[in-house]
Amino acid sequence: QVQLVQSGPEMKKPGASVKVSCKASGYSFTRSGISWVRQAPGQGLEWMGGVNPYNGNTKYAQKFQGRVTMTADTSTNTTYMEVRSLTYDDTAVYFCARDTVDWGQGTLVTVSS
Amino acid sequence: DIVMTQSPPSLSVAPGQPASISCRSSQSLLHSDAKTYLYWFLQKPGQSPQLLIFEVSKRFTGVPDRFSGSGSGTDFTLKISRVEPEDVGVYYCMQSIQLPITFGGGTKVE
Image (cartoon, rainbow over the protein chains, first blue to last red):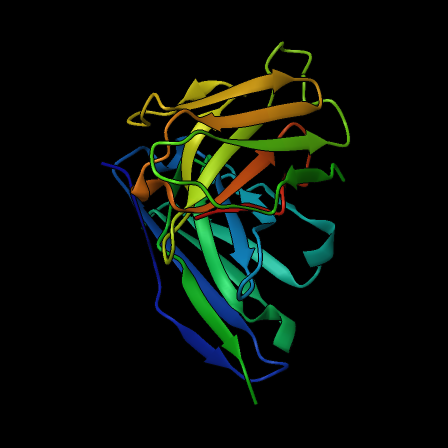
């Protein structure tokens, strides 16, 4: 069955960067796009962008343009999402999702001094 | 960006009773391919969102038939015919006809 397994929780200081991974299994990795969605504590869902593992093409929400990079490694069936220049507002659970159907378990990123 | 507006923000329902959630989009979600790109998700406490309904009214694999979706254009509804205890959580509508993908604010069902 399809599984998306994300990396573990992270604690970062303001101004730092974080890179979250999402390892896929159970389907052909290059045939489905991966989106990244985040959820601040007690808040709703926010789409950040997506990557096409087949060709590496990316689309980002304007809010995250220039500060977020999404990549895919076809040799390991893993997608990565890096956020730079972290602020306290980036404290959230970050989810990867395959075509909105299958979701990772989420990765808590805490930004704290 | 397409704004998705859900109502009500919260809903208290007794087991066995029906429930209805509304979602309105700021633009039509009907694509030229004749599909309407409106989805419903349930996020149970402490879990990842799970897909319930895609393209307005199509139940995803394994979703009980007490869940149904309807609507067109800009107005959509999710109905639960008889709420079960395991239906507790936050329901979100989502559009993917246009980037950025956007979600409604959520409806908490308890």
